[in-house]
Amino acid sequence: MPDITHFGEYRTITVPERATPAEFLIDALRHPQLRLRAPLRVQVEREGEFVLVWNDQLRELGYGSYLTAAVEDFQQTLIELYFTLRGEQARLGSDMSRLWQELRRYVEERPDVPRVYPRSRHSASSIGCSDTLRGGSP
Image 1: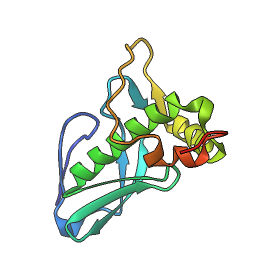
Image 2 (image 1 turned 180 degrees about the vertical axis):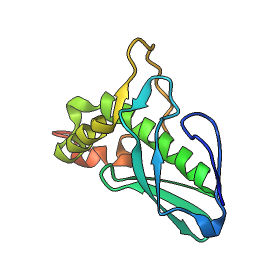
Image 3 (image 1 turned 135 degrees about the horizontal axis):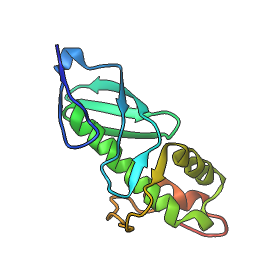
């Protein structure tokens, strides 16, 4: 039986390869300024030596050598996506604007927390923003 512990903070999940779940609930983001409004369901799949987790509504995924690493990568991707789209709201085209609205259904900023902006692994162009900017060019 796998050892599954609360994942909201910095605990780990040990899941043997043969016991990789098909779905997983993420109940927190690892950022002091953001929180999930409700647990977020992700699909889980093992591809060779990697575990992939993704959410179809947000069109995002995370991956890692094991489930915990994949979930942490997914969480970081959501954090970076949130701040990138938030900072580019005025320039988002219709697809990215819809994604921003969908993301805000799941993620909210904590009140009374100083704003901290993470260094992004992604530029606006790497997540497709430049393709949908109104009146701008990549």
